[in-house]
Length: 106
Image (cartoon, rainbow, N blue to C red):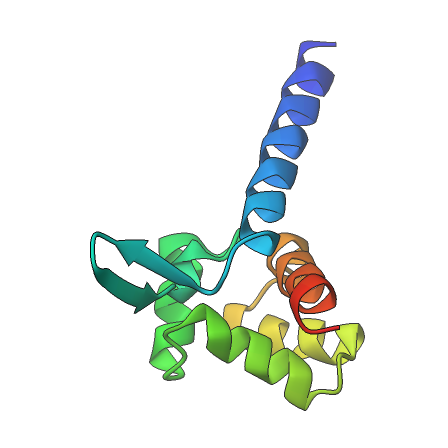
């Protein structure tokens, strides 16, 4: 029972991160400066996967959105492309990008 409660709490926390990402622009403003969000700021990416993406010269969240759009919003193709780089499935990142595009691009 404790495992299940912990899993539900983690899932709810992840969903909140995804919702915040989806509801915000791909830039962040700090004071008077506006900067592009990095790949590490995409839910599910973090530092380890971010380093793998950077090895492929993918630094910013908008580049992941761009790749998803280039793949004609094909979720399976995007999952496969990301899997090839990260060497594992990443449903949170895929869902974050997919939902961001649905809400902000159409």
